[in-house]
Length: 210
Ligand code: ADP
Ligand code: ZN
Image (cartoon, rainbow, N blue to C red; front, side, top):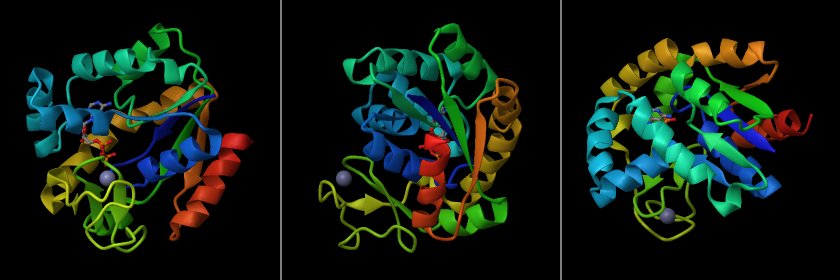
């Protein structure tokens, strides 16, 4: 099964993508994580991407499409995959269609902007492996340490309040049109984000299996 997870920054699409990835044993491909890793390693495209990411802008379609093509070609994607954070623009969606990869469903995690603004401030990410946490909704077992690898969990630079506003604006302008794009293909399923992560996960798993 090939799935796309769509949602505003901080809506919890990554968290839900992870739940489905574990339940169905298919890899979760987060373009945000791949880009942050590249930025950390100082690769040429990573440094270019970092400037865009830190300001809340999108990384160029060329770079992201290139990354995705390479990632999807790997063996572990043969039995399906979950795209978490790709596509984010109509040209990216068109590029995916042009790759002749059949997408089964597009799951939108819908959360109001007001809720997002409140939530993002509590978000933390492991600086080593990229796992994500939330101080209130999804705390790590030991505060400040990653459950998976023991690395430090930190606040992402682009989770500062001003940058979050910019990312929400970019989401509404560039990414939200994908809802209509995939609705037209009959693939869009909307899951309303709930107060409790576990409740959203239940709805998400139902939507995937329906
Ligand atoms: P969030 O979903 O919380 O916004 P991500 O980790 O998915 O976080 O993305 C972080 C940043 O990485 C984005 O704001 C953007 O700059 C960049 N990025 C990730 N995926 C894409 C993409 N498909 N196209 C363009 N930029 C991307
Ligand atoms: Zn970690």
